[in-house]
Length: 423
Image (tube, rainbow, N blue to C red):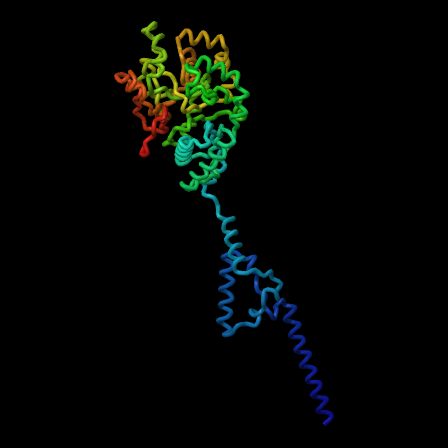
C-alpha cells in the first residue's frame, strides 16, 4: 500500500515537470499564449482593414470568441480614444496627406503679379464700393496667376476693401491663398508729395474745384516712392470690369523697349483734340490730337501681335490702366525734367494746353515730345465707354476715335459711364 502511494507521487511529480517544460518551451519560442491587439492609433486605413480581416477569420475558424479579444486596450497598454476623437483624427490625417493638384501647387509657388488700386474716400461711398467689388471680382475670376493687390487708401478704406474682397471670394468660391492684400497709406503719402502735386495741379487742372484736382489723380507719377520695393506694377482705376487674364496683360512688360517706361492704351475720345483746338488751328498739319488708325502686322520675331500705327494722328493716352516699370520710372531723367515750374510753363504755353484729366494730361504732353517713353497697349485692354464728346460737338468724327474691333479684355466705365451687366 505504501509502495503504491510512493509510485503515485512520483508519477504526479513527473507530470508536473513535463507540464512545466512544455510551458517553458512555448515561451522561449516567442509564442505568447495571449495574442496582443494592435493599437488603432498606429494603423493606416489599409492596415486597419487588413487587421480587421485577420481577426474576422480568426473568429470564424475557432467557432467562438477567443479569450484574448476580450482584453481591453487598457490591459494591453494602449491609449484609449473614443469614436469622436478617432473620427477627428482620421479626418485630420486625410487632410494632411491629400496632395495638391499639380496646377494648384504651381500657382502657390509662382511669384505673384503686383497690381494697385487707388481707393480713397470710400466710407459711405457705396457707388465706389460697388465699383471695387465688380473690378476685383472680375479680376480674380479670370486670373491664372496669384496676385498681390496694393490698396492705396486710408485706414477706413482698407477695412472696407478687405471686407469687399472677402465677400467676393465667398460668393464666387475663389481661393484667397492666391490673393495677398497690401495696405498703402494714402494719407501719409499726400503730405509727402504735397508740393509736387500743387505744381502739377497749377498747370494740369483748368478749374480749382475740378474732379481731377484731387491729389490721388497724380499718384502714378510717384509710384517709385509709393511702392519702392516693386519693379513692375499694373495700376488700374476701380471703374473697370476685367474679362481677360491679367497675366496676359502683364506679359506686355516683356515687349517694352529699353526706352519704354510705362504702357497705356490710347485715349478713345476726341478730348485732346478739343484741348489742343487753338494749337491745331495754328498748326493745321499737326497730327497731335488726331484720331489714329489701327493695322495688324507681324513682329520681327514672327509672332502675330497688334501693332498700332499712328497714320493720322495721336489722340493722347488714357491712364485707366497703366503698366509701370517702377525701376525705369525712378531712373527716368526725361520724366523728372517735367517736374519743374519752368518746363511746365513753356510746355503748356507752347501747346496752349489747359489740362483737366490729371496724370494722363502730363503723360500725353510728354508723349508729344518723347513718344519712345511709352508703350501703346491694344485698345482691348482699356476699352473706354465714355461717349460724352459724341454728344458735345464731335458726333461726326467720334467713331474715328472710339472704334475698337478687338476682343475686349478690360472694359472701362470712364466719365461715370455704367458698365452693362452682360458686358
